[in-house]
Image 1 (cartoon, one colour):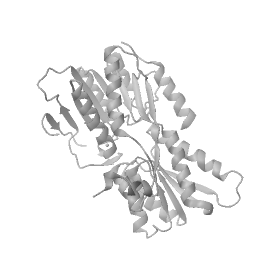
Image 2 (spheres, rainbow, N blue to C red; image 1 turned 90 degrees about the vertical axis):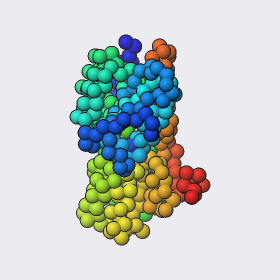
Image 3 (cartoon, rainbow, N blue to C red; image 1 turned 180 degrees about the horizontal axis):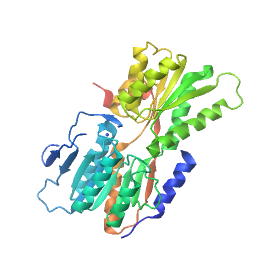
Image 4 (tube, rainbow, N blue to C red; image 1 turned 120 degrees about the vertical axis):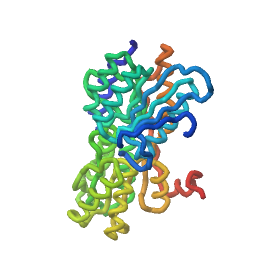
Length: 345
């Protein structure tokens, strides 16, 4: 089996350097962050729908289909897989590493052609990935990375999260201006992507504060927002009580940013506190249009789903391909939302 064993080492170096159809679908449910669809099924199986013989099956275990971001990845991966003659099994790990490990075991038992993961935990999922390595099944990661030692990752595509974090930091500096003040970060440390976002953000904040006596931006708490709207809401509400002078929140994704806005709105502090999110999902863009969120570094999940399938096909064909691809973000603000066709009624 051709593998890129060095890829896990490179992913670790990245970590230290920086840091959610109709016909042909069968669903089963074993109970279900990212963050907000009402989909109740844990598993979806899609076929090629054109009557041709399948070339194989791709197994996909998502971080959480509650987050629309991962739903877009799934839909894009599904379309690309079906176009290439492959079936897709799509499972919802619901941010549970043990559930995702079980998905990998199921994929191995089914003898899938390849496995695609949004790792629920950058380290803990490593042991399950090693089982797939031992079974000779290539594992690809999408959006989120695994940085556990001695795992073999055949390919990865994701956002340049550190670069996105720097854009988020620049947006926070811009919206707070010379006043500075106290802010909190809603993080999600199990995800390597979120660790890198915070590191990029802090790089800008620290540079802004250097040599200043007045107008410093002080991060008074970095707390788990779960990548989830309800967890983000509760974390923010608790900190509004503990820190009544907050002027800003950086949330590592749109669902937790929307949860933060809900808490701030209930506390009647929307004029006092500015929010910078991350993702650029439709709900986040709409919130920017409405002035609830100041800005988002936006990601491109549709491209991730398409490109990870391209890597799988190259791997299966024995062709050379770029094992690690990072997609830069761009900063999305109200002026962008006002011109966005996706938000036009």
